[in-house]
Length: 182
Length: 399
Image (cartoon, rainbow over all chains, first blue to last red; front, side, top):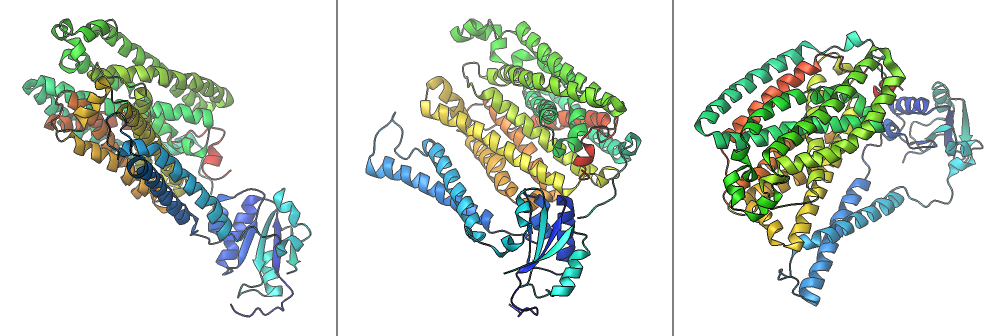
């Protein structure tokens, strides 16, 4: 991490926009300008936004795949243990290892474990729960859950410069740009 | 964001490129050559030719009926995905007259296909004798005519209102299409179930599965989506559609394809598990015939290539956004639709012994070639986008 050249007293610069498409356009230009420590906030999920900011690969899908495979193994293993090892019962003359009968339960455990992996994996990757975040210091930020769209260039970014970054954000025609205390 | 200028919404700007006429010519030539081979097959081995023709006809009937279903689903639910492929779906629904025509050899040769249509077989079989009130030739033909009349009327009305919308009919046409689609989807499930029982399940008149109709229709939707994806990929290489189709649309089609692959698999495996679990002789024998003597390898191929490989491939986000890759998976699925139908129909005539006749392939290509030629002819008749739909700008990413 390079040392920021602005003093430690700033989390970043926050630009406010009126519409989702303005925010996406601004995110594209910010990414193109070389900023990487950037985050965007909107009242609802915007599909193109993550890509515009350069977030291409999230580890969550792999976690979900791992969870699903573990769930399938657990479901089949449980039924194998119960039907073949622990309590073998002859049902309708079928073999003890009757795998077609195990599919529905294995399917359900696959979904269950994959869903857990998705939820908890998402929380861990996002480092949630997080009781406080500096961006809440911005006075108008509460509007991010109503009808305003925000883009924050963080001071940790190597290209960050208090004055030049502010000029850059103003060039994206936001409604306003504010400084965010750490 | 890459904001290309809004494409023109003038219907004349969206007429089919010359390539569509070329594809029609290729399809027609291939179809006619294969049809000539089928004609020779008819003279050499009439029974085999009819049995092969049945599978081929059911495959392409599925594409047309599935397109009707998807078009109606889109009228009811809306969404950007449907507007870009609506004209492909509508053109496919207008192939029903051709499919009715291609059905005539089958209707003329029912005893070669269905055991219940042979009076000498019915006379010596108690079960068939009792089922004759439903499974008899005149009633069967009547049901087929009725099914074609219902589907044909739906396709005709939806196509007509869609054209009125192009001509500026606006909101009234949209409301009519929505209302007809609600009723039409109910009819599709009911009538489609009868078609599945008549044309495929009654090949083995002792066997029954109450899930069969929905499985049949899920296969149709899959086939129709395959056609829409492949044709949209072809069209995307030529003006004017090259300006309208984006990888975002393809991402949507990939997601839908994945959903339909899973839906079809869910139904197929449910049917299998229920009958395997119950293990009743009259039900289990159907799977017995289809999992022995070589047919088990076909069943395995269906599990691998109709479900597992497409499923795993379609999980990838980047594959879904790459048009040629998605079109490749789609074409694999169309081949597997044919394999699945062959696996359901052909063991009736060759239980416990794998059978693949050259006429099976010739018939699939003949019906497919003629069908595609008719389809491309219909596609070229109208603008490639429903330019007067109120949501068209949104669908093109300019909302």
